[in-house]
Image (cartoon, rainbow, N blue to C red; front, side):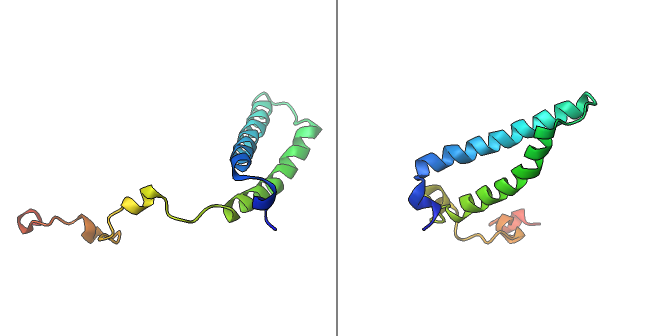
Length: 97
């Protein structure tokens, strides 16, 4: 069983987003406290120690449950190009001099 069978995709996306916002808020609190030169409160030290471990688990879970099927926008790229500089060369010889 994976997380897809427990939590539907429509719920996972907001959960991942809320987790990202929580990370920004935690970081902002820590930076704000450091900016005024105060010592970090104990609760913040605990959160700063635990959050990265939880974030890693959340990130791996999100990555493992990401749909790798190409979407409609991914199918619109020009299949004749391979990403080299030759792709940018002009088709008209007079422009390549």
